[in-house]
Structure formats: C-alpha cells, structure tokens
Length: 329
Image (tube, rainbow, N blue to C red):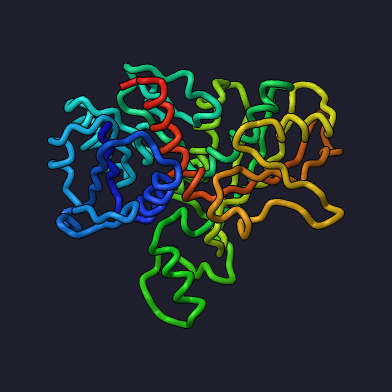
C-alpha cells in the first residue's frame, strides 16, 4: 500500500502527518509531496527522514491513495491526473464537494456509500463536518426541518497568514494582512467571499454541504460565519427545528452514543465545549443543550471541534482507513 500526502508542508499537511503517525495505517510506503520550492528538502515522519517530491513525480509513482491538501486549483488540475494513474484521491479542497458525481464523506455518517468506483472523494468543509456529526442522530430520530447556524471560526481555518496576522497584532508588529481588518480583539462577520445575495461562500458551504451529506434537500438552512481571534477550533451555535417533539434527556443520550461525538453539558460545574480544550483532539464536542421555548420542537446546541483535525486531516485519514479496510482500491 502506497500513500501520497500532497501539501505535506502546509498547515493541514503538518497535522495530517501527526494523525497518520498516531493512527498507524496499513501503509508500506509514504510519498510526501509539496510545491516546487520545497522539492528535495527533508521532511520528518515517524522518526524517519523523507525527501519531498513534486506532483509530477508523485503521479508517476502511482500511489494507491493520494490525500490532497493543496487548494482547489491544484486539486482541479492534478486529481484527474492521479486518477488516470490508478490512484484514489481524497481531496480536502472545495473543488469537488458539490460535484454531483462525487461523494462528500464524513466516515461516521456515510462511508458506506463508497465503492471501488469512487476515485475522487471529497472531504467536507471543516465547519460542516463537526456540525453534521452532531446533527446526524437528531435527523435520524426526529427529522430536521430547519437550521439557524452561527459559527465562530478559528483563524487557522483561513491559513497560516491569518495566524501570523493575529500573532503580529498581539505583539504590536506590522506584517501581511490576511483579513481586511484587525482580527485580534475583534470579530469579523466575513468568512470567504461575499456573494451577490449578501451571504459568503463559507455560509453557502454550510447550506449546500449539510443537505448533501444528510441526503435531504428539504432542510431549510441559514448561516452566519464569524472569524474570531482563536486558533484552537471552530465553535457553532446551532438552532435546530425538528419535525416532531423531543425529550432533552433522550437527545443527550442519542448524542452520547454517536461515534465521534462527546457530550460536555453540565452547567452546574461550568462544563461546556470550548476550543481551548478541543484543540489537538479528534472528537466533536457538544453541549449547552436546551429547549428553544420561542418555537415548537426546537433545540439549541453548541458544537466545538478542532478544525485542523476532525475538520480536515483526521476526517481525510479516516476515509483512507475505510478504503483500505474495505479493499476499495
């Protein structure tokens, strides 16, 4: 089994290497791939040194699986080339997510949809992954009618330049700006690019990807995405209108039994999810569960997860694990 990690020197790529080392996949050979400026440099993995190679050499090596974390343009160009070489591609960019011929996979939810014929598999957006994992048991048991979503997203979701901007501002240094305004001591209601309808591309992803993953285009969804000066994970306030009434204790039990979800919900001792404690972990943490008394059959919940792990690297590696286990190559 040969696995290529494309974008190995990037922020998600670095976390990908950590997750791969932790989960010990049944892989015989790793290829670490990056841009031309990094080719030939050494990269450390599992206490061994590897030479970084370029994309053309990676395709020529015909890996069984390639995990791409190098942006939409790179994926659009190179994913088909990997597929032509016989490789199954797991892509972290937005390039293939809404392609009707491609599966959008959160393994705990819909890995069973995959077959050997799926050669490009899309990894959902980070904020979508954590939310749909928490919504799955509610949708199965009660049915979801409407979602009102407000996200408070880590600067790490924008990239290394955003983290550097925040750190520079905290240290009183000048530097390159990833955002149109300061992010430290501030909140920016601006995730992605603005569309003609006034929503942003990040907000649109929450609408489109949630419907696709849950397999229900009738769910009414509206979202607001806010960037906050945090680097440990994304937080989401989700108002969920269900199709039938619910018992709050039953909701808690359903969530607690959901693989990948950890309930942290005890206000008496100030126990609730926070990015401070989610950072570096793979679980999706859910808390602040309470009935919305302003509307029938409606629930409020607070969902937090490390956007670089479950929101990106871990989810992609879990897809690779499933492919290997089920022999879908």
